[in-house]
Image (tube, rainbow, N blue to C red; front, side, top):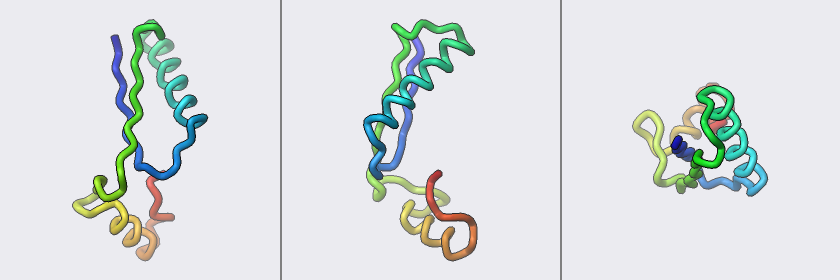
Length: 77
């Protein structure tokens, strides 16, 4: 019985996007591991930005530094 936990920052992931994640992960486990979709669980946790950190920094600070140092958009994409 596979259990997959996806954590994303709470920034407006839509119900449609969540449904696509659940279906996609389930389909992947069926294809790769030959698991039954009926016993595959996918949980999506949305984490507030102030509870998420990268590289020892709160995510908002990390993004700000990444954006000003030219390391991309600073988003978590």
